Structure formats: C-alpha cells, structure tokens
Image 1 (cartoon, rainbow, N blue to C red):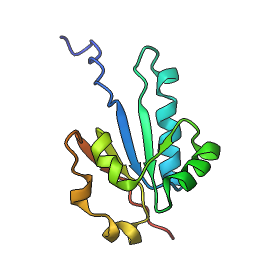
Image 2 (image 1 turned 90 degrees about the vertical axis):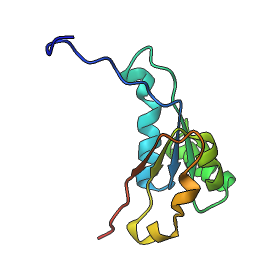
Image 3 (image 1 turned 45 degrees about the horizontal axis):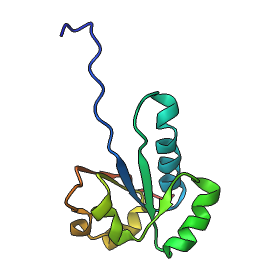
Image 4 (image 1 turned 90 degrees about the horizontal axis):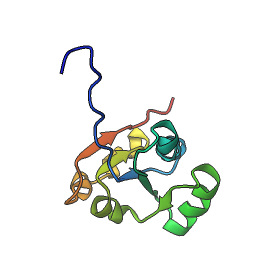
Length: 117
C-alpha cells in the first residue's frame, strides 16, 4: 500500500459500555447511535449505559437524551462490552473499581473523567 492510499477502516466494536449517564455519557451514546449514518454499511454499535441509579431510572433518562442506548447495571458493562468508556466526574473516579472493568471481551477502557469547575 502506498502512502497515498487510505488506510483500511478499523473494525468497530459491536458493544460499547458507558459508565456514567450524565452529559458526557449520554453524549457518547448519541454519537454511537449516529455511526451507521456517518459510515454507511458499518454494523450497528450498541451502547450500554450504567449510572448510579437503577437501570429502570437510567432508561427513563436515556429515553430523552440517548434513545438508542440501553440501560444496564454497572456490573454488566464488563461482561457485555468490548470497549468501556468511563464518563464520571473526577471526584467520583476513586469509587470506580478498575478490576470491575476488566471483562473477558473488553479490548479497551477510555477514561473521560470530567473536572467540574
């Protein structure tokens, strides 16, 4: 392949787990829902979102802010996701157990820790 040829697109994960159902987490979920429109022919990527509230309460929130996403318990993220996005405020990061994010199919963990000013 010459330097003028575009690189082959990387394979997208089938499922992304998002820890944090606030503005950043729901924003990531909305962006994931747009992938098929931005990259026609790309397989659908599922967004799973977990927050501090029960999944049923998070799902009501997602119905408004990220309707294509599915709410799950935090413990399910590592078991079901290939990529995990941590989108919690920095002051809450100490409450996140890194070992709980190490699921059998997890290929990467992305830290979007937020600093509130």
